[in-house]
Image 1 (tube, rainbow, N blue to C red):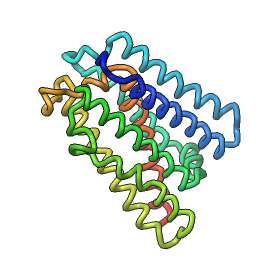
Image 2 (cartoon, rainbow, N blue to C red):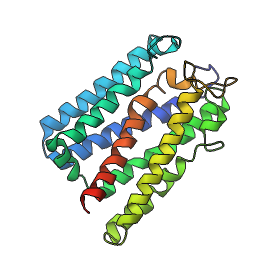
Image 3 (cartoon, rainbow, N blue to C red):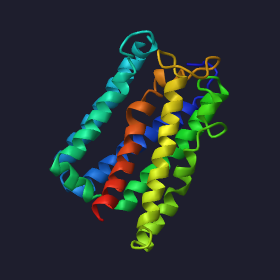
Image 4 (spheres, rainbow, N blue to C red):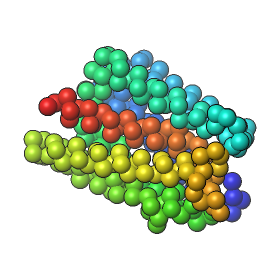
Amino acid sequence: MSPHLPPFVPIVFGSTVFAILGYFFSLVLGSRKNWIGSSLILLALAVWLLLQAVLSWSGFYLVTDSFPPRFFCMVVPPILFLVLLFIFPSSRAWMDQIPGENLLYLHLARIPVELVLYWLAMYGLVPVNMTFAGWNFDILIGLTAPIAAYFILNKPTSSKNWILFWNLIGLLFLLNIVILGILSAPGPFQKLSFDIPNRAILQFPYVWLPSFIVPSVLFAHFVSIRRRIVAE
């Protein structure tokens, strides 16, 4: 990591990660009403974050010429976990109990994340095209999340299609930055930004972006979209 990077950048990023962790705990506890089960879920997420921290500290992800690519260890387990959540009826029933506006508030985390990406780009740790100064429009979803939540709370009938549209746009924006991140990262899939590659996500604490923050945002989008489709 750049020795000139101001300390507030990792502090803002780390605070965002732990805010999401705490918010997930409140969502789980509020819908399950079970302290033990909710605490176990929180513990599992904390262990996952710790594992990713240890791997990044050890330099595991800095080896970019292995096959399969080591960054799969960041993204494959969360994706499998999300798939399992939507397979089991009990987990689907739990997700349906989460208030829709609470899912939207989770997207507020995209604002500090995008600011962190911009700061990292200023210090040459990610390419500018991964920020809102380039091809990344993800911050718009974070900025409009309170508006979407307002429509859920105050216009629950007429706003359903708009909320579905907002979630689909949010998914497209997220897919856009994920593709940019993968194509800009050192490794077998790099096709962009060879002069300033996406090095930050291979290091602590930014390894938590693909391994925790992106899956969290995906979860919120998928649950909201599923709820709208099932309601038809």
